[in-house]
Image 1: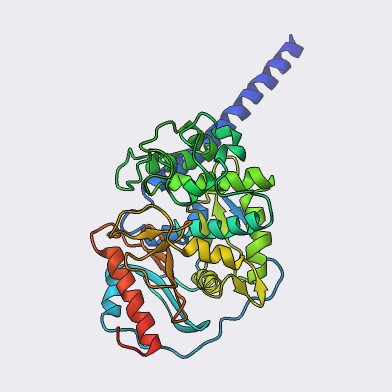
Image 2: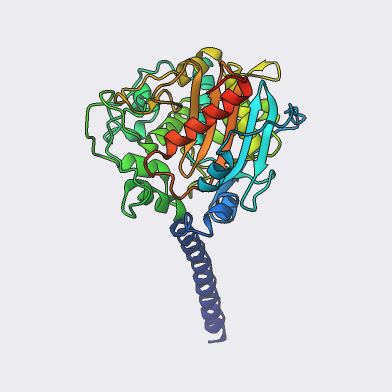
Amino acid sequence: MRTFGKALGRILLLFLLAAVTVGVWKREQVTRLMAVNSLFAAGKITGNFSNMDTMFLTRAMSRGAAPVSDLPEGGEMTLPDGAKAWITERSVNALVVLKDGKIRHESYHNGTGPEDLRISWSVAKSWLSALFGIVMAEGAIDSLDDPVTKYVPQLTGSAYDGATVRNVLNMASGVTFDEDYLDFWSDINKMGRVLALGGSMDGFAARLTETFVEPGRQWQYVSIDTHVIGMVIRGATGRSVPELLEEKILRPMGLEAAPYYVTDGYGVAFVLGGLNLRTRDYARFGQMFLDGGRWNGQQIVPEDWVIASTTPSAPTAPGKLQYGYQWWAPKDARPGEFFGIGVYGQYVYVDRPRGVVIAMNSSDRLFKESGVTDGNIAMFRQIAGKLEGAPE
């Protein structure tokens, strides 16, 4: 009887430990879900954007052992008239302006500082595009016109069955996906809850089944397309995106601080928007693209990919912002003018002819209001024009 009692005690102890483990696991899920639901709330959004690692699963990355690459001072510029009000209205947290590779303006606002690792949101798409160009040049991917299922068999039978690599790079996959951040039931917010609850981003993409148009016929911004690009890279190389990004871009660039990715519950990087860096390091990335993919005397991204990816090629509607391979261009883009953009006011803007790079991080809850993006581009152009010394 005593033996039975001991055995029963062990069983009860195991059940108790299991219950505690499940409770902790559920508590973590609930905490992350609550973080998603209050991520963009007034009074919290600015702090949240600099502390994503306290709310989500993340994967730290190495910057390597190389010295921090130089960003020399070039003398403080006077910002254009109206810039001070614009910084306030757009809830700008960080603004770094480079001219010919030198810092001409650097400022931090709303209680943030230069050492903050800030969420890039969709500026991360442009980093992934850079990595894609490297991987393709190395021979892992045969052609932009290959079907994505060649590298990701998991997508066979999904909405992506029939789309090419070029289609997803161009955001012209034809996949039905609601990108409305302000609609709780939109696809983008459902995806956010999958991320928060530790689900699989790969599984989320594979479960999409509806298309609205034949691939390649029409541009529509579909963030999950970028996740599929990440799946293609992983399928073609057998390696993770963070591992590749460390080796191919981060270490050669000599960043100031080691970045990190937000991840899903399987450790897969949230490549469409989960990259976190210092604002000066975003500026370094822009300068590297301004210089044709070269940095510190090294060709990091192939120059032909820099040109191809930043040149508008997607079937966007006339009079709208233009799109390349995960890079944007203004409606009336000038030669050599392009940018990466993320929700709530994240930018890496490049004006190659004028030698200007502008990196900006914001927490602008009004970012979707009519004219906001056009106004931001207009201000960037004013800054670039002032540095050039010509009227704008």
